[in-house]
Length: 527
Image 1: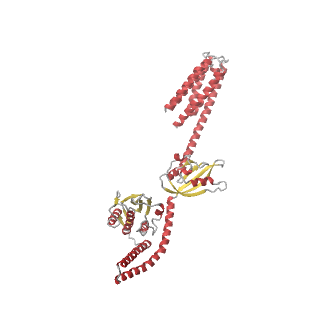
Image 2: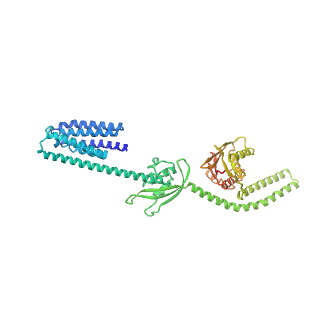
Image 3: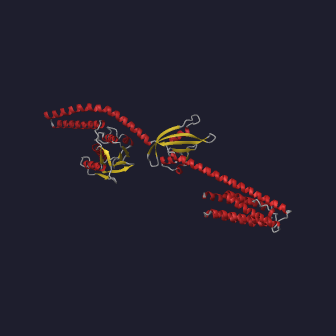
């Protein structure tokens, strides 16, 4: 409100300067023969000096009320003096009082209009009475006193009419501004309360507005994106498709979906609907976009598809694994009998050992796969998560895969975390992740395990300094028989995924090639 009043004061100074300059200029150049011509020059000089002082005052002070009243009273004094020296009741400059009344009404509403009206009437009446008494230079006798009173009353009524009109217009303007401000606030509140991202574009595809939900989804502020093309936020093909769409022949909204990245470089899956933005006369003036962050929904869909795919593979492969395991056991037993009964050369004995070792490895793979596809007997009990992790880490440090150049660091939680799970199954989860972690660090490094809580759930994080994974490798991480290591069967992380799902948990993997891998497991807290 203060800033608005200050702008009005600057407009007042400029308008006064232009208007009074015009009137006085005409008087000086067109009517130099008037007897009061020599008095106009000091008034012009005083007026311009005061205008310069007003502008400096306006620039270097925040006391707008003082500046207003300074202008008001100096204007009243100058006009009264100008009226006095230019003939009083016969002066050509009487309308200048009207200017004071008008700007006082517009700037100070009712109080300003009444103040200006009252002081203008008093000043004008006083000067014209002095003119009647013959004390005003150039004053002329205008006849009998009733005619004198009539002329004063006529000008006074004119002042009053201008004041009433100015006050009325000022109050109507203030009321309209309040209503517009209220409507704007309500409109802005509604737009910002909508949880969908809302964006408007001009006909060239430049952003003209951006609501709060859009800022939260994209991570950019409205000020950063105003007048920028939509391709600054979403892929360029989306903007091209919008601009190429013919909404006149096809009034249906344009629907699009895409993967994109926000300002924090996080992947988002966005669903967008685009419609033409129309003016009040139904002319297209731009485009209206509504979009949602569908990342979680997309992840759930992919997760369901993955589960359905794995269930189908499991049903088919479980029977096949059983059929392989039976002849595999017979084959291994027969070879062991032959080895014990036959005299074999060293080279042939080495080949037999290789066959037995590979049979044993194949039997282990089939066993792991049956464990993955088959029902696991579960015995969930409340247990301390930190104790289970520490016990598993102690056992793993004695395994052949853990070398001297590997380190495992545990960051304990601030408070004990108890979860309801099958301890044997969850030890396998921790073991498999530790195994993958050290395999990913053949040159050594640290594997950090952090325990904590988030959103009333237990959070178990594993961070290694290994080779990391690319997008395609990460996508296939939980698929059976997909291994990123030479000696892996590709079932370890598939089993981890299944066990976590059975415990009503979730697992999230973040990894980049050469940047290590972060695995977050979220579990419900139970007592």
